[in-house]
Image (cartoon, rainbow, N blue to C red):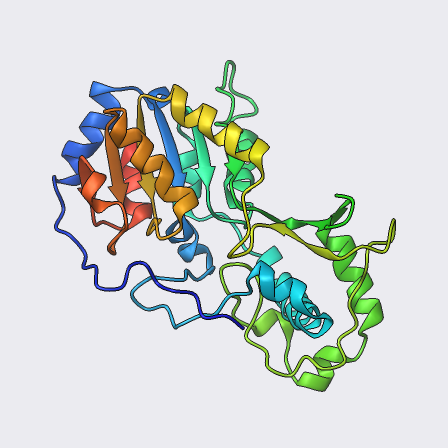
Length: 303
């Protein structure tokens, strides 16, 4: 499996540019919530038990690339065995305080690099709490830039399938696999993209598309893959129409996220970055906080 080059190598965490209260003043007094596009990364979901790739305590990870996935049936079996093992834990994750606080804000939109669906789950929870309120605001639009683990796509013809249905079919095809490898799916630690560290995947039976026999993969953007053009256009619309950009919990190591920061800075829009580690976009930040994302967003929503 390919080793992913770390573009943050050699970067150090900067100092905070301003106190959080001063940054939040800019967010809420100089501008309104609706002026801000928000870009989120894995740091949004760590409090939900989803690890990140590049946090200070994160172990080295070698995620599957699209080239490796397509290279051989054994590699696809390896991925699906690890993904099948990790899905029950991933599916059980719940939005944390950062997601819930962000869902309280009426933003220009949220562009997330995460594939866990927790922004949408938070929006549903907040909407349920507001169900009896007259004139409650509509939830902020969310663009899953890198896709979502709850969908599976056929690479031949684009057929889409519910992940839970695929999970049941894989379980039927591999009834004794978990017992054979001696792992309880509920007790495993997942990677940010929902799979688990599992070396022995020999003999795992992979499901092909029931419509056309094509290859199935989760509807997420693997390393080395491209974000679908329509999704990029939808994210661009949110970023273009916003007055500024707030980055929450992302190291911006992946170019698909960094490009929004570069574009905002080029257009003279304010850029706010909130994360406790270094990022690839620190030189573009007008306002930089090194606080925990949940603390920052909770304080923002409280204003």
